[in-house]
Length: 200
Image 1: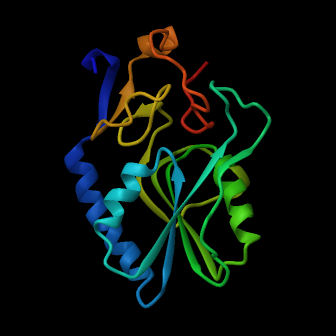
Image 2 (image 1 turned 30 degrees about the vertical axis):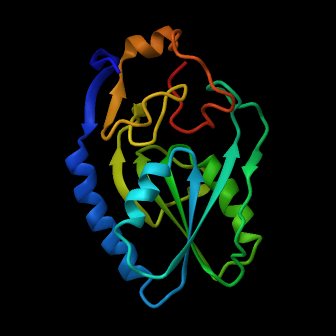
Image 3 (image 1 turned 60 degrees about the vertical axis):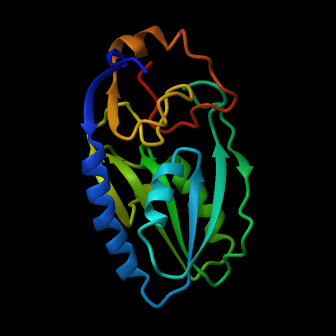
């Protein structure tokens, strides 16, 4: 990856790992004595979920949910598609949904409604990043690793046209890359499900 693709490193690898130590301790305390079901939201949360799991010692079950409201671009299609349904039964269970970023909150509101209908004992949300903007339906996460300004960011699971997910840090993308629309970056099917969308 070209360093010129990035304008600024917003969160270093060291900052992320230190904060995850603290966040895991918060989750550990909140779910002490409970049988936790952790649900990762694909695909952006994969690195975040993996790092959290390595820090949690309480009994838990792991599942993933996949949803898409954007199909190959940065503007909504008007549809909301479940690309991967929950496999585990969450009725009467304590559920923690883990996602990469809370932007407008529209995606998490839909996920909240879907899981609530399945009858969990409790339902909470944990996000790696929360953008400091108004959220849909006054959705508020229960656990937040970092709050950030309203910038388009990549790295640590977050992508632009399916690139940059594997960065160990979080960076703001160069305005030039966004302006060009990543013309040299192929758009993967289902890329960009509406969170952290770059300006158009």
